[in-house]
Image (cartoon, rainbow, N blue to C red):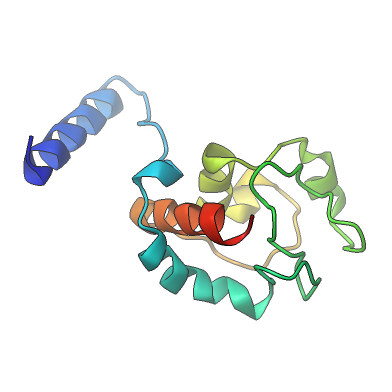
Length: 132
């Protein structure tokens, strides 16, 4: 199957699900391009460390995949983030990165989100590689 055939089928499936009132599954890191994700994730570097574990304006993202939200020692999380009770994986990160203020109402991150599903998948793929 060619890429264009795959994308046409994916769009048709998404349209069919939307017609049924169902949302398509969020893009997963396995579908993302980590090289492009690195470019998109550059926005994160203003507030987050990706590799050393240092706390900046936001908590370090080192080891974020598989980590419980609100759990980096030494960072003053909002009560909303501490209470979220999520462990970060591709699906939860996809939802959070799409709209942080919607996914965790009352969190401190002043970022509008990444509205392009491809950008989110790419960032998640990058995070999976770069923040272990």
